[in-house]
Length: 236
Image (tube, rainbow, N blue to C red):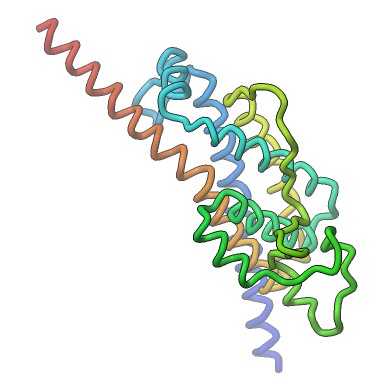
């Protein structure tokens, strides 16, 4: 029994270390993305991306729909900041990510996810009475009321004015940093199920935000270097 106890404590401490490293890394990632879009920062400490380059990138490369996507994501994540730290926030984040991915998926993928959605007795799934023994199943599922998917956490209000991509991105990075502060919580690293859910949610945030922008900025930096080499050759 003692060996089992030591083993479990070791696992907990390992999760805590991984959690602290994850939070610190992501906060650094978000701050770095924010800094790069100010138009006076080096990508990977190698290529200076100036204001003109970042403006051209936002105008010519960033899809118009992304501004709306990031706005909805930032707005929805902001609501999670009012929740207590721990499992409830992790579960809400994972639910939000599934709703976000459904909302912006193509029609074929939406149909696949629609068929696996859980029936809701009303337009507001959070008001549904839970059946005994269904707590785990209810943690992360899409819900449908009638023939429509309804959301617990994703906010998709009508936008009556033009959004500024840079300001939206700044807000998204800020709210993500604040949210990640809530994850270094005993309830998360003590519970392997909650911890694993957070790891999955983190991988989706990395996919939808960090990796997406990083690839484009790498391409932009490569083009800047090519242009500089071309200018040097013409001078020589």
